[in-house]
Amino acid sequence: MPVPGPGYSITIRLEAAPSASAAGELASAVGRVGGVLTAFDVVESHSDRIVVDITCNALSANHAQDIQDALVALPDVRVRKVSDRTFLMHLGGKIEVNSKVALRNRDDLSRAYTPGVARVCQAIAANPEDARRLTIKRNTVAVVTDGSAVLGLGNIGPAAALPVMEGKAALFKKFAGVDAWPVCLDTQDTDEIIRAVELIAPGYGGINLEDIAAPRCFEIEARLREKLDIPVFHDDQHGTAIVVVAALRNALRVVGKEIGDCRIVVCGVGAAGSAIIRLLLKQQPGDVVAVDIGGVVHGGRDDLDPNRQWIAANTNKQGLTGDLHKALVGADVFIGVSAPNLFGADQVATMAERSIVFALANPDPEIDPLEAQKHAAVVATGRSDYPNQINNVLAFPGVFRGLLDAHAHRITDDMLVAAANAVADVVDAEKLNASFIVPSVFDPHVASAVAEAVRAVAVRES
Image (cartoon, rainbow, N blue to C red; front, side, top):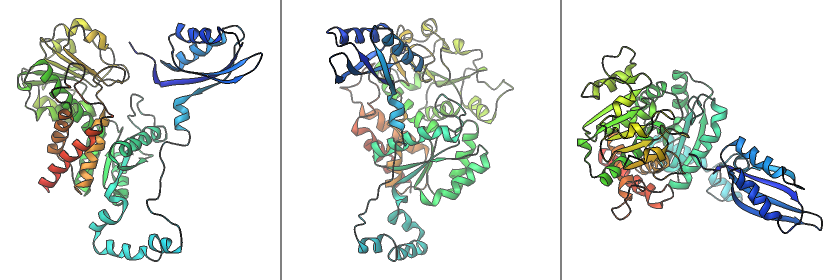
């Protein structure tokens, strides 16, 4: 199912005999073991040898080793060095701080720093709201994590989470011009996390919670929203929910169904699944059926935490019980944010006609997309190597751009709905089809459309 991609891109520098067939033999060796050659550069040429850089995409670290072994197995080939291009990108980190003002002489220094800066400090002390106008607060977001639920890696801790938070900060800047900074906290105690964020909040215009495990993340977000006068947004919850709801709106247009007539199965009721359910319910679907590791979530179960109790009370109108396979029978939509390889084409065949499958577990989805396509009319994943990638980057940069522009003090469900509609509307009728239900993450119109939608709601609610 997976194909080699740039996430496992390597460059192999090697020596080979200077024969006319050398290039073809090297390229063929890469292809025989399933590598995808992306560049072939001769860096040195001698009478008795050539030195070349072969750049190729692999499936995994083990597959990259297989490619290297295949090359070494050729006669008269010696590998000098293998470079992992992903690690090279991360050397020294991916973000930095730059000054927005010139410091060329004594006059500049006197205004940017002492003594002139004291006057600005006094102005903020007299009117704290001026911090949004006169400091980085107006355009800065803290990306906060405890490292307890990082991507698909689990609880790897704050230091190991830092590369992800750096990447998040880079995306904020690239897509919305927002200055974001990683804040990796060396604690997984709920009260300590809340207190730490409270203490740093004066320097930021918003808080983006990231990769904090459920159910702790629900309490952290709720309590911080009560305590702080700046927006608090848990991207794993709300960013995912925004893009899923946007994609579903367009997928339903493709298959010609109304959400009020649809039964939607959501597999996974952690941070992402719970937020998806809550935002879906605001669209007034026919019904939502939640499924977790224990099967269908319903009020008769005795193993429900408070989050699942709320879900049981607000979903599953028909009182279904049983496992995921049973829940899928007759369902119009499947949305998975759970675990890989939970069902196959036979189960999709039991769903309603013109069904929709969003298999978003990453990197391996709940069903092989090619299997899902045998019966489903629209299929989406969280992967970049298949059509219809459900990616949070379509949401969070624009959401915070709009919040910061509006000097918002909070974020509301109406803002989330507006953001989802803005993402969906970028795909107009001329572009919409079964393989294109959400815009590209590189579409320059997405972040600005989301920002304006969120800003308009924030201004209206202020």
